[in-house]
Length: 275
Length: 305
Image (cartoon, chains in turn brown, blue):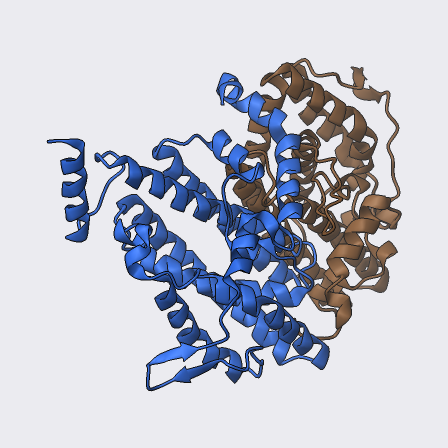
């Protein structure tokens, strides 16, 4: 593989892996504090799946870069992670050993983020099934099998929040309003994606998934008369929201500062050690 | 038959080894003791998720991250199974949580302590779970059959937790000095709570739960089994147990050790442990922040509870 292609491919794989690991980390925080115990268990499973997917992608990236998957996951500099900003914020309360716990747990946001991200990821992974890299194609197939259950879980909760009570619906609407700019940030491409399409490694660039995603998510809003920040004008969607980007360039917010600090804390004690 | 006669017949059946099912008639005292015992067990599984939960984000490799997440998921799953038993016995879940966060019901002493390092994660999964498996193994033969069956499944899963914990500890003690120190310091923090884990050496004839067959082994016997199982393993991997008096007395056929301060245990389990208030206030916060979700999915049932 020539250098330019190899570097673009590694960057793309890291982007995939970082998206999955960050949402996996954030969702794993619901273990022990979810609204009902059944959901502690369910959300934990979803999170474990995502971490497993991240590990597949890190392993592929590691082969290209000559690095160990754990190194890629836990020992890169803070601005060297390329996940979308949508995924990095905490949605659970945070425990403080001195008892000054931070609130802000928001199940509506956790559900809205996960479901709409899953719909995006499903389209993205679909475009990897026919990859010219058989290892990536194989990983995509395995991932897609699991994601089917994630979508079912998300759909059920989406309906519950939209229709379960006035209060739940208001919370869902508020969460959606807050995350729209970051949802659109999902479509910020990694550098060099055109080269990957040319080489047949991926079917579509990330920004080209925006229209199909809008087509796919709109019916879920329409079915429950949830506010949608735009409409279709001819063949194109016109949205009233601006995307907040930067994630794919390593630019992140305070949610990432907090998560990065936590997730690397133990490993940094002995970075080269066996744990 | 009078009530007293029925109770006597029930007691006799239990002593003969008969098991009780949820739908069987049972004395009020038996039901009340079962609820209290199983509820405390369930609360412990749930509250036990909190000290370990802090380390889900901090696990030092992808493999450990997956294992820690799955382990804590198991614990919460155990809470779910056990709460169902309590619900079957007549106490609704909302009431259970209400009593828990108000400090009216208890959870196990070990979950009232803070965690400081990755060492705690290893020691908890290996030795705290190890101590729990010894109790739970004995509970498989509880006179209350649904509890015994649930315990068989739980013990099966706990066996993986011990391996997971032992592997974390072993990997660290074979690592650098810094890693080994994490484990030694954690062992020193956990030894006293571990020695208290099985409760004071109440004489078997005074232990009502034992008399009803809810549990099947006296506290001191469980502690002795714990020591027989783990002391040698701990020493073999080069960790030092912080009790100079600990030794096996072969004449008496039992372990001798520094007597734990049982008043301290009582203070800990009644909500005055080093992290009791913080853990309960966190549980309360998380319940409050998600109350709207339960209202949305349970509708009027949640209102009524």
